[in-house]
Each structure stands twice: as structure tokens, then as C-alpha cells.
Length: 373
Image (cartoon, rainbow, N blue to C red; front, side):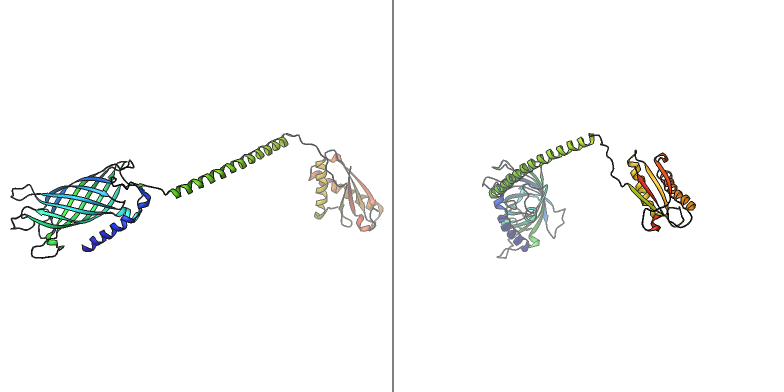
């Protein structure tokens, strides 16, 4: 328990130094509160716990020095349950240190949380008027007391003006007869459990609690940043307006293009197309189909165009055979144009020229020459 009290003392020093520069409401008249406690107290050991329970009540006056650390002046009185002439037979007046563990370990957020835990510890003056503490001793006694416990606080209301608290604690009678020094002795201790309500008076900041106070340099820096961002936004707005204007112009140009009537154009095309054949054959090889398809596309794109297909043969064979073969070659090209590419046959003229002399190499004259008019 000694270590617990030492911890409380160390925590209050830490709490006193934490965040004092970033909260407002630090005047002497700020952060005062008053509380009422009721509950029970019973000897810690060597007595029946509930059978020895006695009612107790009291008042506390509190001063908060930071969001973490505060002091309480607490006066408690236990109701006499023995056959005695006095209604209250034990009084305990204590000066208690309070350390808010929520704010100590999680930092203060600018407003009390709904639920908070405080560690409490301190010393005081205890006065007994009958033999409650020392059986068989009929005289009034004054003692040094110590108290350590926890406050489980529920801060209620939007303004956080009220706190409902449950307060378990242990109270020691530090003065033991026959010993010169003070002692933490469980035989001279009592367990105290009380519940209370606390009212927090309004501060100079018009609030019932500490408020976060921003650093002026930080505020100036944030204002400068906001001004810079506003200028940047204004510049971007100008760029956005220019972009919108360009978009509208482009949209108008696009609509004008869509509304314009198409202008008929004549496709510039080659005039002569060549389809070659094997010796003595009028069948068209697959390798010749690109030339025929190109010719068909020109005829489709130019509906008024016509084509003359002249068939030729090489010198081998007699003249009558070559005449018929050259015509078959011209008709073979026409057939593909009509059947496969749906070209009107009235636009196609075919003729057999017999042995050709178009090319110097006789083998090259096994050909149909298509001339677009």
C-alpha cells in the first residue's frame, strides 16, 4: 500500500506538468466542485463484513488544478450503531490527492469523458468518540488516518456539470497504541464503499470543465495555410472556367460537323487491274482474289463506274482454242464480281482477245485485264 501512495504522489507531479499550456480555465476561482457521499464502512479484517457494516456520510470540497490532478478536502462521519450517547461516533477529515487515470494515460480531449477513473490517496485526522476502533477504551481518541481508493466517475449532461461517483477505499488508523511511528496495519483499517454526486461550478470560460486552448502561433500558421489554399482554389477556378469555355467551343464545333451534309467525293482509284492464270486454265487461284476484291470495292464506291474485262492467252495451242480460253478467263472474273460481290452484271463488259501481246514475256499474257471506265 505504501507503494500505491508513492505512485499517487508521483502521478500527481506528472499530472501537474502535463498540458498546462493548452487548456483554459486555470484561474484560482475555476474548477471548484462540491460533493455529497453516502455509503457504509466496515472493519477490513477480523470482523464479519456485512454484520459490522455501519452507515457513513460526508461532504467533499474539490479543486482541480489540471485535467489530471486535483485535491479534495473530505469530511466523513460514521453513524453510531452501538449503545452510546452520540449519533456519530467516528469522524475522518482528509486531504486527498486525486489523479485522473483516463487523462493521465490517454490525454485530455477537451471535455470530460462519460466514464472516468480516478486514483485517490492522502492523509487526515480521525476522531473516535466511543470504542468502535479499540474495544474496551471508553475515551475519545484522535488519530492520524490514511486513505487510498478509486473513484469511478460518470459525467452526465451535455454541460458535464454533474458527476455520479462510486468510491471504494481503505481507511487506516495510523496511530497504534504503544508504537511511536505510524503504521499501515490491516487490523486497524476499514473498508469504505460510498456513492456520491458532485456538482462542478461554472468557470470563467463559462464551462464546467477545462477547455482546450490552441496555441496562437499555430492558429496564425493555420490561417496562413487557409489563405494560401483559398488563393490556390481561386486560381484553379479560373483555369476551370477557361477549360469549360474550351469544352463548350469544341462541343459547338462537333455539333456543326455533325449537322453538315456529307459531300460526295470521287474515290481516286487505279484504272487497270490484272488477274493472271495458269497455262491452259481459266480457274482463278486464291492468290488473285485480292486484286478482284480491290476492283469490286472501287465499283461499289463509284456507282456510275463500269469495267471492261479483256481476256488474253499465251501463244501455245491453236488460235481457236486460245480465243475461247481468253473469253473464259474474262467471264471467270465477271462471275466472281457478280456472284460474290453483288456487282450488277450490266456494268461489266467481257471480251476474249485471243493471244495477247501486251507483255514482252509470252507467259505474262495469260491474264485478264480489267479497265475501269
